[in-house]
Length: 116
Image 1 (tube, one colour):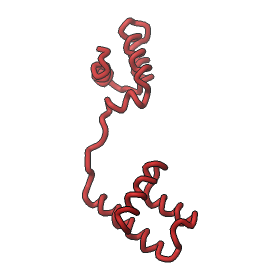
Image 2: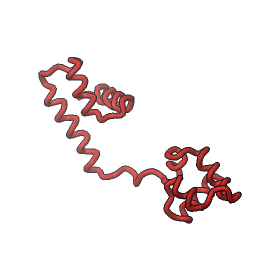
Image 3: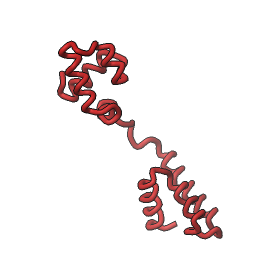
Image 4: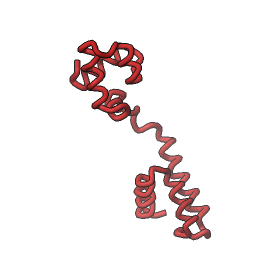
């Protein structure tokens, strides 16, 4: 498998939000890859991916506070912080709506959005 082919597999996997193996299977189903030799190409891709797994995680993961505005919406978060601060929404209700389980998380998230 050449670097160009691998790069194209990764590009298509990113576009279609799936694995490179799924891309290969779909390419074979659409007769874009020949049936002869497909098993070898597929095994090579599996080996390449297993190499990434054996290296261990590249990073620890995403940031909770960076993901929150995307998960529940920055606009809603800001509105809830302001309403809670002014007394219009009780703190437990605001925390429930945002999926936060502690006042510490609520306060830290408010600080990160500049709503403290």
